[in-house]
Figure (cartoon, rainbow, N blue to C red):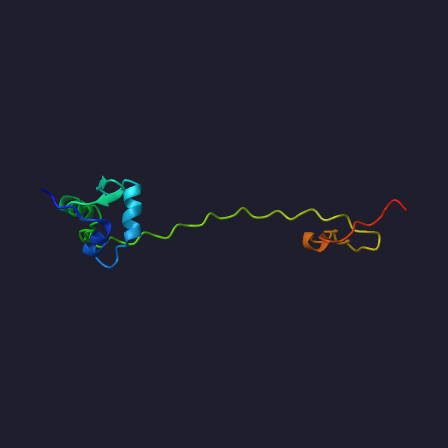
Length: 116
């Protein structure tokens, strides 16, 4: 007969890092093996061994150090073509182009009445 332990005993058995809420969430998502008796989760020793094996991480084998890969090169941008300037005025001065007000300055202002 396999002994069944509950979620609190499993949390104590696994260690101080494991919380009961994590065990409950994993059981609800059916990510760890368990038995359900009534409304209680139960775990056999085989379940505990399988849970520990599922979450075991081993170091990867050391491989000889490879030469570092060169950093990826940025794509060079095409040179910008200058915008055509408006023709100079008769006085020989090129006028600045109107850029209008920034959007944040237009907020909350009443629109001017043009109809008058």
